[in-house]
Image 1 (cartoon, rainbow, N blue to C red):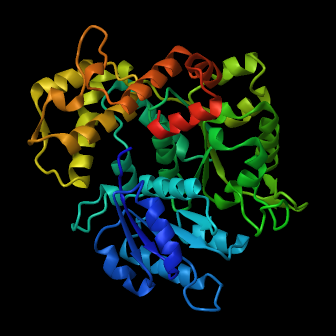
Image 2: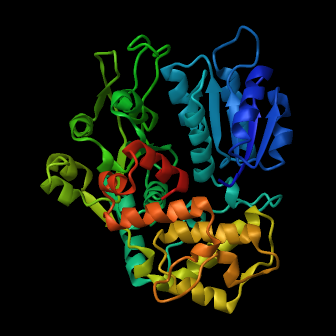
Image 3: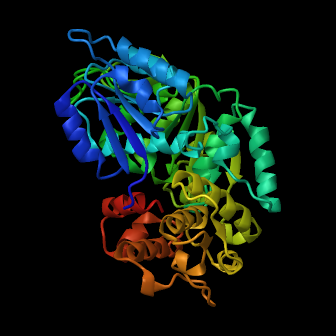
Length: 448
């Protein structure tokens, strides 16, 4: 897995920093550690992609106000730089205030390695720092820099629909194959809405176990269960006044659908271990690559929940159905990664662009994006040649297996199984001979 991104960690505990270095250097291209927030502003000039910031630095002071102060200082320097806050003394009010003040996420010590890495990667992905020119001080407009709509008629109509729907608070269901850009569309809805200055919280519904579902979404109070050492807000409260994006909602089990439906209807949550209802005001956006109507007919998805989340339906088409958009998308990603990897003056050879246009792109826009990023990193000159993409154009428009790594081959195998089984992960797991959790872990790994 390629290491991408620059992480700046600020924590006065040297043991914590040592542990974080060992963990984060496995995932990020550069990890910078500092023990004092007084060095923060100087380090920001080196353009980190995400900051992991402790909230308490003075001995005996655990209020978190120091972290909130330095969060505000970071935002003064770069309002779009993602900041994940880090503390051993968490409470609900502190977390809510931190998120409202611009923090991307709030992680409690002792941390879960996988969740911490996921929080940093998600914050980095959703931030604008990766789209800035190094040293230029220029920040692109969030919506314009985050999405390339394309010139096809179907995408022009989709853009108009997004702009119209964003002005309302209607629940939105976004459907489409893996890699079509459903989360990007969801973020565009948020950025164009009246809630754009509030947080957008993303929840991967397929990654939440049934035992942790209520705690993750609705929060819990101290002592609610064995590991509940502090009060913790759930995703609904974290998204208060903003947008809650429930990705892969089609993977939610039937029993948990009833609990979600109840909260959507009542607009109130009850934290695990508590009896007091807490009102929530959020804009709900859901996404899935599965056909929910078919799942309803099969008795696997609640019809009443479908009606609740499907006030407005947005279908994102596969890339193979809008190949006219490929040149614009390819150029968009080339510019992005040319800046990120300091490779100016890159351009496509004519035959390369023709090859990109005829390839089937089973992984859709995400596959195109990753292919161009890889080509930018590995190409020798300033002209991207067909060989830089490890693919060939023949009747089947398939990738050349002679040049695939083991990981690439596994990714291709899983992607093919997902397509053959129309996104039914149970059938995919059975076909591949692996468990569903293993399958989901690989889907996350390869971003399928």
